[in-house]
Length: 171
Image 1: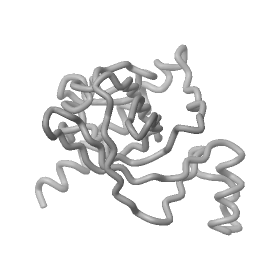
Image 2 (image 1 turned 30 degrees about the vertical axis):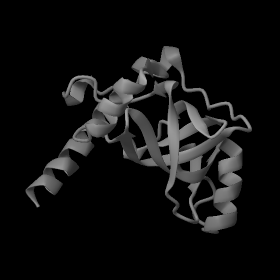
Image 3 (image 1 turned 90 degrees about the vertical axis):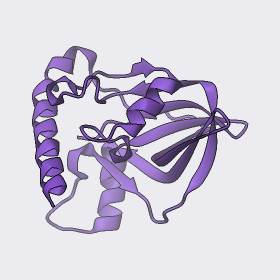
Image 4 (image 1 turned 45 degrees about the horizontal axis):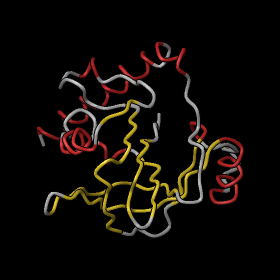
């Protein structure tokens, strides 16, 4: 119970810090991820290392932004009081899956928000921060301030192997 209350408080603090830093990042504005045919949106539910190789356990989703998000939202939610997707995005995940994908050793990893130092005030949005795969595995395991499982990712796959991960920021 104590841990749940602490986590809730920590999350609220992180949201406040994030909200106050959005203006700081305005010179480096958010740009929607340009989709490619070999790219999937997904949640990363697990990360394993076997024989020195990184594997992701992913749950594919459908990610919508802007007017497309509003259209899908209206079709699926049919709420007369809400005609637009909250925060400009909408996620569809009708079936939960657990697909295991190997990750290339030289995979490109771009993050928007993560725990840099273990201090809440240092967890700020900085668009498309390039980190190594090794650094990402460390970040993924640290879930006390920012949990990577909270965010969808755009995952680029070539020949069955993940070659690029882009964290999708969600307000």
